[in-house]
Length: 187
Length: 187
DNA sequence: CTCAAAAACTAATGCTATTAGTTTTTACAC
DNA sequence: GTGTAAAAACTAATAGCATTAGTTTTTGAG
Image 1 (cartoon, rainbow over the protein chains, first blue to last red):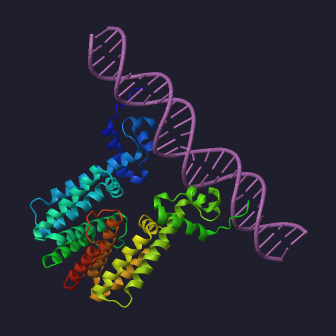
Image 2: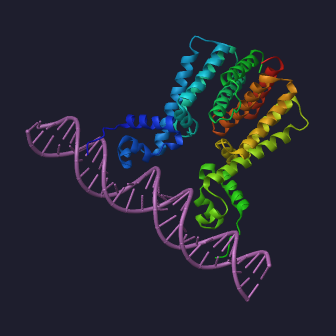
Image 3: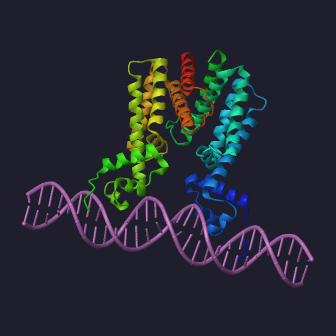
């Protein structure tokens, strides 16, 4: 039957491709097996379950998002750095919609690896905010705020929640800059 | 067989109850029929499909969210009004998690009623922002910004994205106030 | 009291994930 | 080279899901 020569990475790559092109909800083991030229149960030689596959996608998504954000912020500080990581995250969501969607609906509770990846994103944001000289609760509230801003904007855009023909990149840039200004004097 | 006496509203109410208590992903026609003491196909006398049911939940969710926000903003202006609608939306997400989740993943494209409900939420936000005397693109960018802030914060909180034992209501209030301050002078 | 519509039912189809058990291929030891 | 054991494919089966078709039962209006 001419072995297909799959391994875990090949399965994961094909799953990512499907999720990014056809949407995460279109990722099924049946369809994935079809795309790989194999019968569905064969996938269980490489992946424990559909849920585990989705979790792996989520982990890959978080890591890629974090990598893009840290790379974007290199050499920048304060407002410039804030805008850079916000736009980098937005680009990630636009270019890898499947990984992005997977990273959103993963349940980090009880999954150390996933929690660690999420923690690294938080650390990136915190690092960028360190340039504002915040301390204690102020820094934590600000971190939450920036994460909420970026996530909220990107999620609404991805869901098609912004109807008008008004430049989206401009909206996000303005929003982040306003937030940055708000950080310069207390709260 | 002693007719169960269902109608569309009874089915919708039971579906809402399941979604709010067990999670939207636990809402299946099979489980819903079980809860109503009826066989699955009987539901099709009242509801066209599972997808249509989810859409109805989404519509109900948007309407309730908007109702709560407008009610919360009555008699308030500027910063106070901003904070009030933000906290009202957060309460909605916490108290009606099923309706909230349904309202997020509905696809408004091609659904006039859903679009209208979404438009009313936008109108509420715009009305609150009118107190800042913004005009043209400034008002539109600001509307996007406030929606992103509120949605982002609430979504991250609902997903358990905020780990620390730091007061969440305080975080959101600070974030919205900072945004309000940013509106007072340009951008 | 009749009768037609509404609401329940049973039976069936096709999709999904998943498990069990079987065959085939490959790689490595000798 | 050859034997053997693990890995990777397979077939077959189960269970849950949404959905459709066709049938029976109940109800309410005339």
